[in-house]
Figure (cartoon, rainbow, N blue to C red):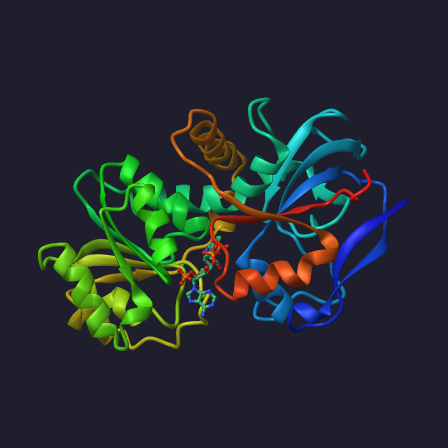
Length: 334
Ligand SMILES: NC(=O)c1ccc[n+]([C@@H]2O[C@H](COP(=O)([O-])OP(=O)(O)OC[C@H]3O[C@@H](n4cnc5c(N)ncnc54)[C@H](OP(=O)(O)O)[C@@H]3O)[C@@H](O)[C@H]2O)c1
């Protein structure tokens, strides 16, 4: 047993319920590894968990994405050796100096990738990877809609779709964010805050496709964009609803899928696309390779110490961030 600084969610609520405390970290049990965390990715799922939309018993240490060094390995554990640099996505508790994780969720980090890059890329990069390869395999010539295209997942989606030969129509909430989407290869950019009604936004998307509509709409914004996403599809197109940054989408009348052109809707999550060890290693390798070879530019928008967590989440929730936000988990004096 040892103790370490950790960010804590003391009760469900807004950023004000966050506090940095010293917590006891047990020795790793069978199948477990203790990681000295170097960087932790900040994600929208942290907000859902903190607010209780995805219920987690309080108090808890947030942070579902991180990278660091293996410090101790539990008994009977087939794990990377002590001293190996590793990263993970979807295991809670990495907004801390020390974290326990199942060995099975950890992937070794290649030398050419920094821990900050790994912590920034694992969740959003692998999400964009499964969305563009498995949820819908993007084809050359496809017209693809990406909402919040200057955000963390959004920037990855734009680049992976462009690399697959698609024409990307990107939305975002400011001229600066639209310029980022263009710089990453989006062919058309639309400020979705300029449209009051979903039909108006959908008409702008359709116009960018010559009237046909998009093959797939990647929608992580949710409540405020979903209706426009549905109305932007070509016949038999697909809305991939993968998050709700603006709020959750209300229950859907399935007859709307008929009326929209025999279209499809899915609501996938990363956990179901990395549960198999082989699949996890495939996606992580693809993400690391894309960064190392410069095929994907990953923008780390800002880094924060754990003590400034509330400010970091206000930036994320207040739509002020571009790219990825990251916690530096070591104390400032380290
Ligand atoms: N399903 C999965 O497995 C999975 C995995 C990772 C992430 N996600 C989801 O992907 C989405 C993006 O996550 P991220 O971490 O990359 O965040 P992000 O895109 O960097 O930040 C969210 C962005 O959403 C846009 N937005 C529109 N309306 C908003 C509102 N009312 N409040 C806040 N933001 C709003 C903002 O961009 P503009 O200013 O341009 O509008 C904002 O910057 C989230 O919904 C997240 O839950 C899902």
